[in-house]
Image (cartoon, rainbow, N blue to C red):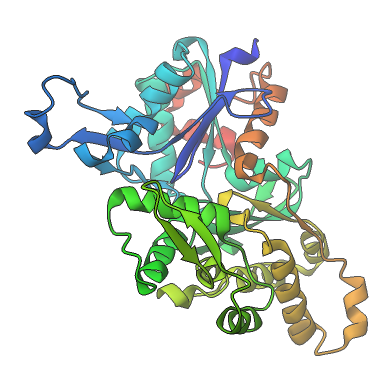
Length: 389
């Protein structure tokens, strides 16, 4: 079977990454948003005909004329009608495929309700008529992209951060940790921090601008208190940023204050553990035989793990907790730990890459895919093929 007949689609909260089996990069990456024209604009736009439904990049250009909806929230599909428009755009406008001649590999967030998974399979067969479907947990695909079967995946995208232990290609839902702090929340916090400095960034279009500021200037501090002190006493951390309208703003301590929410979620009023605590608790709750393997293969994945300084801060915090809780302060034991945090440069698209690798290997293995025949005979019970029914 030709690679062009095997579609890979990773639906994230912020972006959809889609393409074909065996590719090293998604064919298309577009924002997972749907826009509908506001009534008050419909009359004034006679000369420029606006479509009833606008998807992806086009929403950014027409933002002030549209009601915007995000069909995926915290990694999970909430609005199936709008998700249908997103998939239409992916398959017909971006990839230009005939689904009835293709198989599709979809990605599944950890802790996704089984009803959602069933609805996804149903949509792929009933609406699009795909020839075969397979659904795989995102964390497992991340490890495939790294050439691993066992490891601990920290996946932080736009809507949610997960810490998922995987052993021999199987994830452990009951040990998976979740935190509702990720890209979108950090951008909102940066909007808030900049407004305290006197820069009002409250229009929808400004949110995109602040996201760009975040991606260009933010980093994770190694020692938050010392960095904050440095920011108060010197101007060494201040950077200028030119806004789209030409104004120049100064960004200082906000550069590391905003992403600090990943380690200290209470900064943005989110209860629960930060990233380092989630990782440590997750590994310590695993059976003792697998702990060392997980400490040696902690893999970062997703756009919100791209901050400079994140791997070294994470390493420091995990070592501190291990020394304190496991070794009771005995530093000699640290030599045996061999902690390793893997931060692959293309980790923004890790889940997609793993999906493309897996789909490329399995494209001609009929026993791997749920076929249309399986679905017609068994209904959603056919999901047992993905180990998830």
